[in-house]
Structure formats: structure tokens, C-alpha cells
Image 1 (cartoon, rainbow, N blue to C red):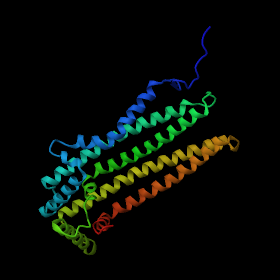
Image 2 (image 1 turned 60 degrees about the horizontal axis):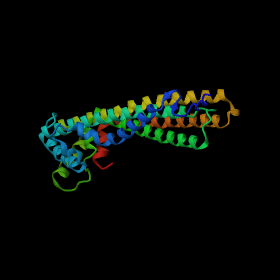
Image 3 (image 1 turned 90 degrees about the vertical axis):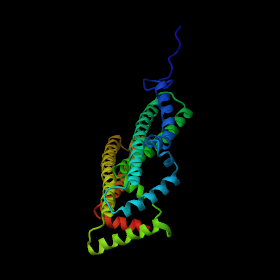
Amino acid sequence: MSSPAAPAWSGRFAGVPGRVPALLAVLAAVLVPAVFVVPHMLAADGSEDGFADQRNLIDTVGEEFVRYWNSGDRIFSPGMAGVVDYWFRFHVAKAVIAAILSVVLVALGFLLRKSCPRGSGAGPAKRAAVATGGVVVTVLALFSSVIVVANIQGAVAPFTSLMSMLPVGTRHGRLADTLDQVQRRLADSLETGAAPPPALDVMIGDNSRYHVALAVMAAIVAVALAALSSVLWRRFLRTGPSAGRTGRALGASGVLTALLSLVVAVVAVANLSTASDSAQGLSVFFNGG
């Protein structure tokens, strides 16, 4: 006499062998710490291992910023060029790893969602565990997506990303004197329209590129969220008020994604505005804003 068939969710995720979600979970567990540890290793070329230490990186940025400003040239001084190249490689590595993590988490979340289909016979404990796992995976996926966006922005304009580390409140030493000079030349440029010195002109252009990059990515995300909200609302209207919990979830999701779309659209507009007046944005930054 043959044994009874196992429930559809037992050992398999919607027809996918059980080892697949297990492998995805292990891969995600490896990639999460890798996002924070591996980029420094990949960005280093043997002479920059110390940049993994945040304090050393900040100190080096300050020292090289002074040298670059005093050079009076558009072209980065050798030391600044080395730090900028390192920071570019760091951002690229981190964006790639975070993107892979996002794909893994989305796939894992999809399998979790399919693991307990309606009518599968799964008990309350299993459904609660799957729901909790789904929430954790979703939060991690959103977090990794933010990391991807931030590091693409940093890779597009690594010099501006590095400048954000400058201790602009410094009151003593060569860096303080240099920052004071930058502030005065920025103020002169804004008030009189005088041409900024070469290094400052590079800063203004790179800062504009930095904010344009975020504006473009935010606009793409806003459109995607608006499209998703439209899909959710159409499903909600087709489902009708009699759908109970499912209908309420669809309606709430539609409202949430619409609100998120508006928030992200505001971020896009704000960054586009900053990019269009990059010198003013830099002035606010160097004055401690």
C-alpha cells in the first residue's frame, strides 16, 4: 500500500527542490557581511590597505585635499588621484555585491511567498514562520537596494563622495586654512560671478554630477513605484470589498507604494535642484550645512 503524498509545501517551494531556497538563504547569509567587508579588499591595490580603517581614510582625504587645492590645477594631485581611484573601485565593488544580494533576496522572498499557497494545509506555526521570514527578507532587500543606489551615485562622482568626509568644522591647521579659502572663493564666485579657481571648478562640476545621478535613479524608482501602485489598485478593484484580508492588504499596499513614489519623486526634484545650482550647494556644505 502506497504512503500518502506529502503536502505540496513539504520540502519543496512551489515545485522547486528544497535545496534551492536553502542555497539562496546561505548565499544571502554570506553576502550580507560581504557587502561591508569585501569592497575594501577588492578596492585595495596593495598600497591602500590602510583605507579599510575609516579614521585613516578621513585623515588621508583631508591631507590630499589640501595638497590638491594648493596645486592650483584641475588635474588631481597624485595622492588625491590615488584616493579617488580607490573610492571609485570601492563603490563599484559594493554596488555589485549589493545588487547580487538584492537579486538573491528577491528570489528567496518569491519562493517563501509560494511556499505556503492557500489551501496547502500548512499549519499556523508554519505560516507565521514563513510570514516572518518574508518580512525579514523584504526589509533586507530594500536595504540592499538602497546600498546599490548610494554606491552607484558614489561611483559616478567619487570625488564628491570623498569630500563628504571632510571635517568642515575644523578650526586649526592647514585643512582649516584651506577650507576657509574654499569658502571665500565660493562666496566670491556666487556674489560677483567671477570664474572659480580650477580645483573649485572641478568640485562644482563633480558635485552637480553627484546629485544628477541620484535624481535620475530616484526618478526611475518613483516611476516604478507608481506603476506598481497602479497594478495593486487594479487588483484591489477586481478583487472587491468581499475579499477580506486579501483586499485590505492590496489596498494598503497600493496606498503605501503611491506615497513612497511621491516621497522618492520629491528626492529626485530636490537633487535636480541642487545639481542645477551646484556652487550654492557646495557653499552650504563648506559652511557646515
